[in-house]
Image (cartoon, helix red, strand yellow):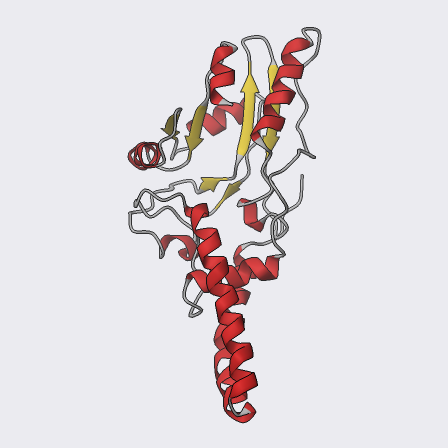
Length: 234
């Protein structure tokens, strides 16, 4: 899609609330063909908001995220949630923003498909008499996010079932979301092991082990539910 946009005379930028040094490292590690711009003080986001282009949601950076990074987190104004803004010199061609909720894994899922966004931009470009594009509240998204309880268990699996661990960039060249399949397999193996234990070992022993582990799991899942609080559109 990036090539198609450039062929049409446009350009693509990725804007993040991370510092520029981290944005540049991610761009290089992930082999992105477009420039990533660090905006830790949210000057770009504020300009878009003040001009009525796009009002991105902002979330605070809590201990849940900062403790699992291998680099220093610097978000003086928090971090903003995903959004898409396409504009020409005359008008807004497309805009979408994420409203974090448990249904979209706190903003980690429920994002528009690239080809869908490009089709919306092309349609706006073709209609030269159209006004600014309205906020897209029902985009075609990339698959359906898992139920929030499963997502909570996946975060527990990512932390080896001792505590929830966020899928954050670790400066290791790996896109955090690429860890999802491995963590999902880890969760499946974990469940299968419990089933096998109940089937092959004395129930009282396995039940006691589960009773001992349950409070730890409950605390971890509750932490996820509290962290990813439900938000609604204003």
